[in-house]
Image: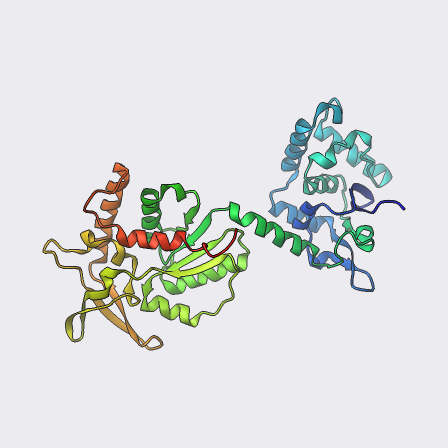
Length: 377
């Protein structure tokens, strides 16, 4: 019995026979909607028009210039004994166009045997489409390998393959950290370079720029958008430890991928008996979970006035669902300015000075860096 193979066609041009399996790289450009099945619902082949395939390849950056570069790189990387003495992509492509015009198809020939193992199939498909002046079918034929049991008959083959790749690759990308605002992202990113410099390339704090909407509701929407986009990176969304954030998190019920984590800034001892200003005057309360914006974690050296008194929390609106008031530190702009100076000076020195209080910021960074400790790569 002859061996089973999968293969590709563009129009009447046949290429890349794959022995008793399939080329997994093709899974990135075909989808279940392209699948054609037999009467039993088993996968036979994928098909899409060449013009629509060009749209997909273009979004992946696979244009004709990139294709030329891929072929030339593949040729250069192929050992001399397995390739022709010379290769000119433009001349090869013109030969293909001429052949298709005259005969309706292109014969790769034995001089092109080096192409299959050396050039990504997506670039090969792009090149063969370029040889055709009209819109023709692009087909990935799997009937033989499916029918003989070498490949699953599931028409979701591409989606399954991509999920396997995503799971395999997710640990190689930096973790994206989303915060409630650009100030949080800037301060935490800077502090990371000081406290845990070995993690700078592994944690990326997203800064959406000046004027971008901030707050818990905006962060929740951004988180949903990232989840819907299918981003390959692991993602951490870290909310303030206050009433407003708790309210948003209580209301939200979006199903997130297993590579996402939703956190809040941690409770800290300093906040357990903290001065506040409310309708009844000045009182000390535990403001953890009620007023834990980033400024509360700047350290006692920033939060204290020259008199030694802590900058108080002002109680603002009552959040009915939480049965609690939202609290905000007074003089936030002053606190941010002083912390920026503290951070810049520490980065310039390359070290934290004795007497500086970084415990709150370190507690936040520790929560972030341990977010996936319960999950295998």
